[in-house]
Image (cartoon, rainbow, N blue to C red; front, side, top):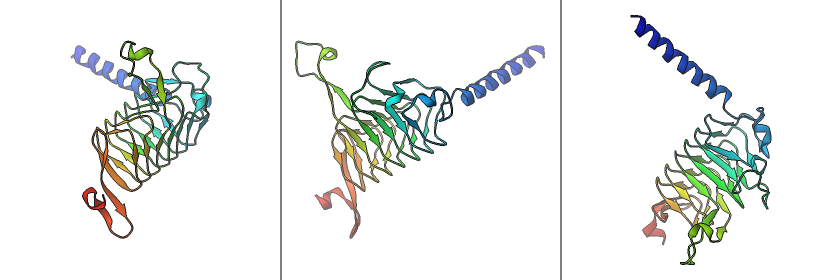
Amino acid sequence: MISVRFRLIKERLAHAAWDWLSLHGSIGPDTSRGKRFGSFGKNSIICFPQTTIFNEQYIQIGSNTMIGSHVALSAGMVPGQQCLTNPVVRIGDRCLIGRGSGIVGHLAIDIGNDVWTGHHVYITDQNHGYEIVDLPISMQTQVEKPVVVGEGSWIGAGSVILPGAHIGKHVAIGANSVVNGNIPDYSVAVGSPAKVIKQYTVHSGWVPANEFR
């Protein structure tokens, strides 16, 4: 009986400690960590625990945005780096970034208002060069191209958004897709690389891809 009670006490203490950390370990606009950001909108939050966050002064977050736990959010390659653009990463109002996602900017990542993502989405504006076959890929030029995610869009779980991707507004990206090009407004795209499978038009509504191409 004593061992059962002791176990229950330990469980309650562990859960209470985690609840305390979840509350006080989160980052908001009024926290000391939140004040490091280029801007951090009202009622926004980065949930605890975070994976990697650095060079916050180059990151702007809008209002009423929630960034899930275990998210990596960074500007540049290493802490303390002086970036060439500001902001490097901008996340708009009323966004939801899913748990375990990564947004790693070096030049320009612009995420519009009302963008939601599933879990484990990766967005980056830099990729590794590989063309020189006698030089390790890690030592080759890392090409940077701006990334845009239009307002009101949804990015499915496990998707990867690569440098140069331009996702229009009100776009749905299917789970586990890889986007490396332009996805027009009001469309649905899936696959690797992501292809448009249907698009909305004013006169016809949602039209399958084989009908508008």
